[in-house]
Length: 429
Image (cartoon, rainbow, N blue to C red):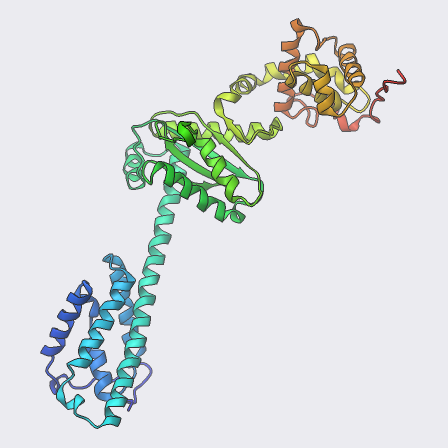
């Protein structure tokens, strides 16, 4: 039967003098050998079971809490939850088999009560042990995630202590002496809705590259992959895959139809090189949005011309204003005419293909090109003037003009203009 006790005090145990504790030590050592786990993880567990067998009492919450602490200790020692549970079950089995003769010789009802008390104690203790082990692992994961997040922030920012950064990179498998490149993936939806895609991407990268030298993380709503320059990415039938191509393929398979955009920075050596590659990849995402690029994979070297244009913002602003500024006086504003120029240059100055992409007649496109020449004094069909006009169009896209005023100038928004200019149809010039 149970021994009455106060809720704030441990129940009185059976007097240790009434039993030979040497056999409990033998049971503990044997169970430790069975499970391959340290005997220290048993703590007072066997004495708790012996008390249950002799008195029939249930374990006190404080005793179970102590068992939970032993579960945490098992996790700290690297003992798996399964091994720790096996240790406790083996100890319980051996204890029951070796209970003193005074227990085993009782009548059937007394044995049944003792067995029920021991089983109840085992059940409660194992549950507390597993809970403590799980909580310790959960805390360890949270701590590792905190360290990982802080490391990634410092690594991509590039302004931390280099020596300390090299030390912190070692557990993540990054050799800072090698050139690395950074690739970013941007989902169209919220990143927390793309957990499955992130997991799939990490699995694909690790499967193709290995779990060393490559870091997959998230930052500011983006998926970040840091990989060394000489990462081996063999494709099917001997083809070569780029890091960006591997990422895009993995995301496309797991994104449930959600499109992704991947940008890849150029590789650079050292810890500062990783931060530089990261900034290039971020700039690539920004430019892709500004330029309305529809390609899902962009490498930093593809955008060098745009970086050159933006490097001297006053100059590109002056170019846009000088070459295209008069387009705001067209009916409907500059946007339709700018779209025509952009498509015209993208098609290699082929009028028929421009008309097809814009869903216009060839005559309508020709009219727009003539109108641009009339308003600006620059002829987009003249090869000698084409480069300057094309550069101005790219600059306008980068600066967000005409939706936004040019820096330092007051330019009327195209949306403030009158109705769209009438485009003559082929039948009525």
